[in-house]
Length: 327
Ligand code: UDP
Image 1 (cartoon, rainbow, N blue to C red):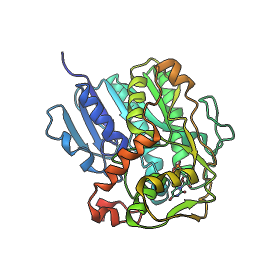
Image 2: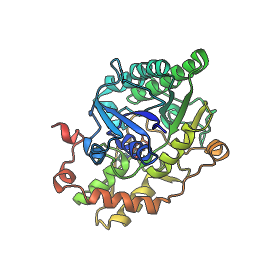
Image 3: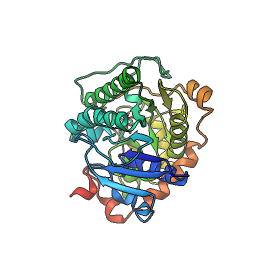
Image 4: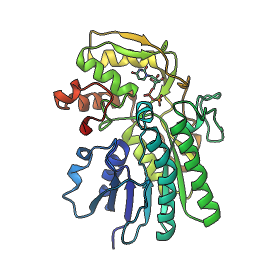
C-alpha cells in the first residue's frame, strides 16, 4: 500500500523534528518544511538519507505549494519562547496568522486533515487553575507575549472557521510547557536556561520570587498525545500536557540537585505578563484519547540533562539569546 503523505511545518524545530521521527517510524512519507530561523537542521539530519523523507527550506508565511497528494498537514512552525517573540515579533505574528491561512488553503485543495499547534498561552495569565479547554483566557493583546498569544488565538479561530465553513477536517492541540532533547540551549526558556547556567557554573536566574508555577511534559508523551489526537475525530481544542505542577523555585532546586552544581538561585525581575500559574486539565485527553503522560519529571530531566551535556562545549558556552547557527 502506498504510504500516507504528511507535511510537517517547523520540521527542524524541537517538536517538529520529534514529529518527523514519529511519522517516519509509522512508515509515512514525511515532507518537512522550515525556514530555519529558530529551527536547526541538525535535528533532522539523520532523516535526509531516507527515501520517505524530503525537506523544503521555505517560510510558510509566503504561499506554500507541495506537489502530489497530502493526507495530513501538521502546522508546527513558530517561534515558541518568550525571548524569541521579543526578538522576532512580526515573524511570530505572521507564521501563526498568514502561515496558518496558507496551509489551510493547501489543506483544502489537497483534502488533507490539518492539525495545528496551539498553546496554553491562549489562556494568558489564567484566573482558573487547572485550565480546562472551555476557559477563554486572560490575554493582554498588546503586551510582549501578545504577538504569540493573539497569533495562536487567531490561528484557532481561522482553523475552526475552515472546519465549520469549508468542512475541512481539523484538529487543534493546546500544548503546555514541554521539554526534552533538541530544545535550544539558548532559547531563554526556564529549563534550558537553568541547565545551561549549571553547566557553565553560573547562578540560576529565577525570575520574580519563583512562586509562579508551570507543569512540564516530556516530549515523548506530548508526541504520543498529538499522534492520537490527529487520528481521533475530535475537532475541538484539546489540552495536551503534564498536570504535575511545580513552582519555578522548586524547579530550580531540582535542577541544582540533578546537575550537582554548587551554584544557587538568584532572583531577577519578573517579565511583563508572566503567567502566575499554569496546569493543564487533561480530563478530555484521558477520556477521548485514552492518553495521559507516562514519563515522570525526574526521568525526563535526566534524559534532557544528558542531551545538553553532550552538546559541543562551544555551544554550551554561547549563552546570549541569539540563534546559535545564524551568527
Ligand atoms: N523563568 C525563570 N528564569 C529563566 C527563564 C524563565 O525563572 O531564566 C521563569 C519565567 O519567568 C516563567 C517560567 O520560568 O515564569 C517559565 O518560563 P519559560 O520562558 O520557560 O516559558 P513560559 O511558560 O513562561 O512560556
